[in-house]
Length: 61
Image (cartoon, rainbow, N blue to C red; front, top):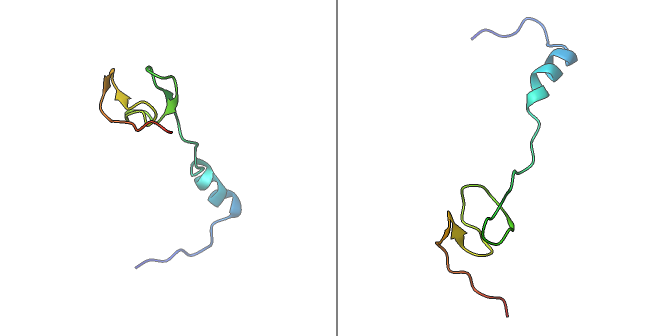
C-alpha cells in the first residue's frame, strides 16, 4: 500500500477542512402553534403535522 512521500502543509490541511465545520440545527415554525420544531416532523408541543393531529400530547398540570 503506498504511503505519502512528504507531509501535507498546514495550509493544505486547513483548506481541506474548511467545509468540515458543524452547522447549527435548522428549525421551522409550526403553522398550528407557532413553536419552533424540526422540519418534516410532528410538533412536540401540539402534536400536529401537515394540518392534522398525529400525536396525543399530554397537558402539563
